[in-house]
Length: 291
Image 1 (cartoon, rainbow, N blue to C red):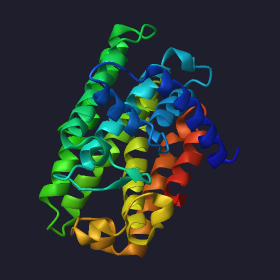
Image 2 (image 1 turned 180 degrees about the horizontal axis):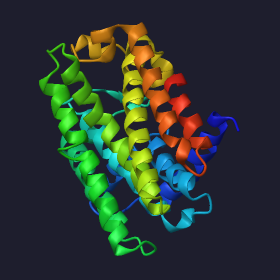
Image 3 (image 1 turned 45 degrees about the horizontal axis):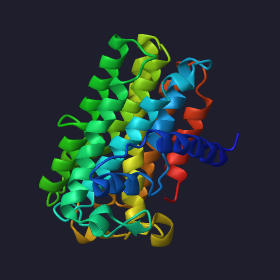
Image 4 (image 1 turned 90 degrees about the vertical axis):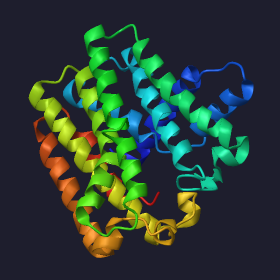
């Protein structure tokens, strides 16, 4: 199975449900801003990881029973992108080839659109009628941990506070928390939904952490040498802003080597799963991608 065509098919599947679960209401501008950012495109990697991790431990799992949860993590991811693009953060004008949320709707509505998507994520998860209350609590806890002060938010703070540094410890902290912890959470909750064993859940957590680190290293590399038209955003902005990145600390070739090493670690972890094929191909895709 060719992974790019499979991921395209899965993306289209998820986007049908994104349309179903996107909220609407008043003030219309707020909901328009939320929908604008969610519908701006993207790989839909995080919901795909939830689904594929569930299938990796239980190939017969009922996707319809948790598709709302898979979609919800894309809403949470979109919130992070809206806030990341703000003038006080990365101050980006483009995201996926389109004007960023604050450029279209203004800074105040963009902030509130991000806030709205964040809280709606947990409303959507907790409204699921198919999973047990115990399982939903574990899912909410994992997602909140992976995206909060001990995860993505903490990593974003480190990205701002340590940008003048040139130390590996700070760099690893940023990448692990800003990107990898959320991806780790998506893999874990998928395994939880699929009723994975403790050993399988630990393998998925390690897999998620390793591919998350490789994903962010590849992002750093693409910022240095990527094609702006393919990426849909300005490149070399990390260097301009003196951000702490893997190419800055190690150079391009060593960064590529490190990304490959993380992917190999990820592949080693999931050998114990029932059906690891898609997760294996997805891991390799992460460091082969051009966007």
